Length: 260
Ligand code: MG
Image (cartoon, rainbow, N blue to C red; front, side):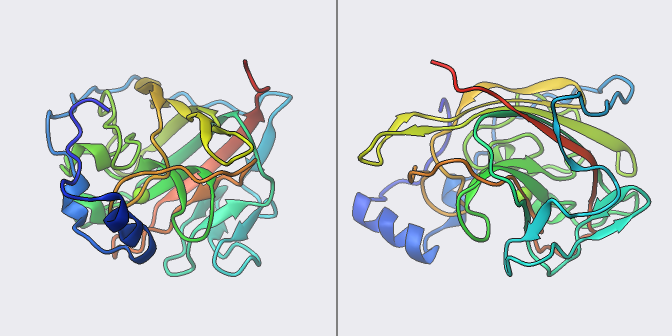
């Protein structure tokens, strides 16, 4: 929450308009400073799923995933043990819903990536998919190797809420890891949030989010807010920018018991 530049002059009434129509200035929620320190990570260390994990992608197929747009088969491309975003097919999400969990995934920005800022290798991990499109809570995945953008939108950010503690991006073409602990939000019978969500995240083994409180769904325009939901799918983003599509592999999740 500290130091985040939020849009000014948004009354409750106008926030509602923003939420419905995506009207307003997206720049109002960009935070550009302080700069996030670059940390060169150690050697790559991915690991395969422990015995109690749900393997979401093992390199062979997308049978555990669906297209968010159509509800039908996920249209991304599976080849050579990886799944690559298929531009224009939209986001994909797990068929299974999850509460709180531990998650591991690996991703690779293509070596020939082009573009700059948000339009360079942008995807994202929605920790809970709460509706169509980009509805949910996005942990940003993009190429942040020598590619400045607003700090609360770079690799490892809780999108437009909390910048990462470090920038451990590897150069394009290399496989990278993301490890997450997601504590799902809780809601009372009246739909009000009784305990917000928390995220701990590591990129390439470097801590980027340290039990960070999530202030609601991550939005491009306007302020975050909560709407009640139960267990939810996990979603990956087809961002829609023209840069070369990124790939994922070795995705698994361990659901965690609710804590007091
Ligand atoms: Mg994204």
